[in-house]
Length: 73
Image (cartoon, one colour):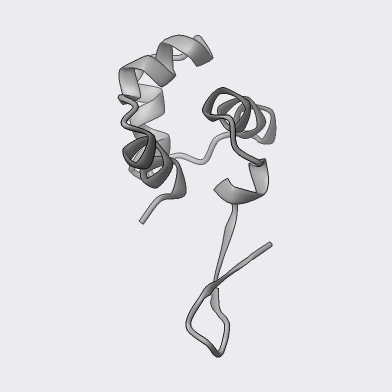
């Protein structure tokens, strides 16, 4: 699952709200959430700031550790 989508769901935030805060279209934010497009690093940092989380929480590795947890990169 996409981390942006997970955080939005955890915080009860709608994609349209995030799009307004970012100054982006809903379609662009939805593309980020659906993994159709990857945000530039500057945008990813803005998303983290808006969502009040560390940018590292939005970047996770596809490799899993031996204990089954996802590894941050």
